[in-house]
Image (tube, rainbow, N blue to C red):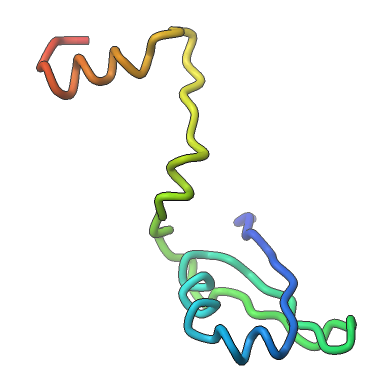
Length: 84
């Protein structure tokens, strides 16, 4: 089962931000559209797609290796050409 991030939005928000919400759906987000606090319908991505990451997504990334200085090690390998 594919995990999709799901948000709740109002009908008016959908109307105002249709293009923005469409782009988020293309990146895999699902939406429950509500009117008067009651669910009306769902917006789900039609096809599973490769997520296009935004800068906000990368800010949440953290290295979880056992090496405390992993970030600088990666810089050494990538930019200085040192072997692993």
